[in-house]
Amino acid sequence: MREQVQRILAECGPVTGLLHEYEVKLAELVCQSVPGIDQVRLLGSGTEAAMAAVRLARAYTGRRWIIKIGGAYHGWSDQLVYGMRLPGTGRMEALGIPRGATAHTQESPPNDLDALRRRLQLNRLRGGTAAVLVEPFGPESGTRPVHPQFNREVRKLCDEFGALLIFDEVVTGFRAGMGGAQGYFKVLPDLTVLGKCLTGGYPMAGALGGKAEVMQLLVGGIGTSSKRAFVGGTLSANPLCCVAGYYALKEIQRLDAAGQAGRAGDRLRQGLDEIIQRRNLPYVAYNLGSIVHLQTSGVLLLDTGNPLKLLRVRNEAKARKHMMEEMGAAYTAHGLITLAGSRIYTSLADTDAVIDDALERFDRVFQLV
Image 1 (tube, one colour):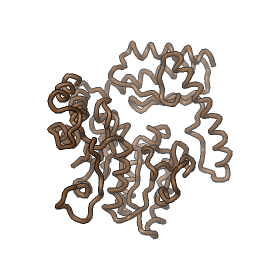
Image 2: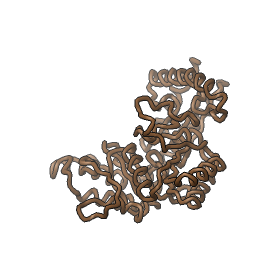
Image 3: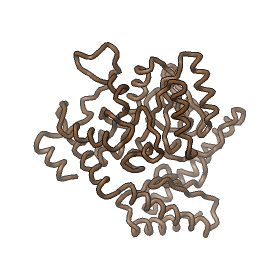
Image 4: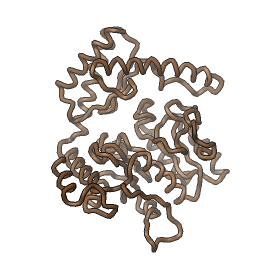
């Protein structure tokens, strides 16, 4: 991968602002790999791609309401900082964001299809829903895992109410296999948001893909129709990141990186289970392939379904969050890097020896509790 990147740097430099051979090659590979993507627009980040997805959905449907699943994370754009991490918390994280920016963003509780149907019915009386936006493994990379049929039922609801279904696969894209979560669940969304894995660790990693009839509204140029969604970016799809992404995905495919990373996740989770049981700790470890969750304070699993108890839950969340951060600091002090002290993502590099070493370090931390 590095050799190919160095070759492109020598040939044309990192950015041209123009179409490049590897933009086409990367786009073709993404379209071949991900079932729900006919066409793709390469962008700078997952946040940008989620912003573009919302804009495109509104342009295509002529509707304004966006429903996200409570607790899910879709980047930090103004309109999607709503109901983040803890379901039912609305604008709790929206400091510095005008109310108008989230005026047509709504949340629906995780795994609650009846609540989603009610929301779609109400919106139909107010002009209709443009899109339902989900993380297909569940909010926060599966912190609240979806029921097996959830995505399939959401697909049916979107079809019934004429809303687009958007899968945010920034985490699951290529990590859940070359076809992403949609390949795993065999559910085709209308739009797919990609990031992270797309360019093999190089910056400017983002993309929006989907059905051709929807994606055509992103077509640019002088000769386009008056109806189009304006999305661009000079640094998007630059040669440096496109060549890195193309060869990274080729290697992921060749080496079955997702499968190997998933087996490493299984091994890590099984080892954590053994330590938790042996030390009789009130912790929970579970994994969705290479996404391993280690809950020591349960902060993201708090029940926010009762509006009367929401204030108490928010206060409790602060204390639990502090506990989780202390655990994260303890892991770091023992050479373990986690996401917020509750999530570990395994990769192709995590051999049995690496996982066993990590488990010894986790054991030393848990011994201190």
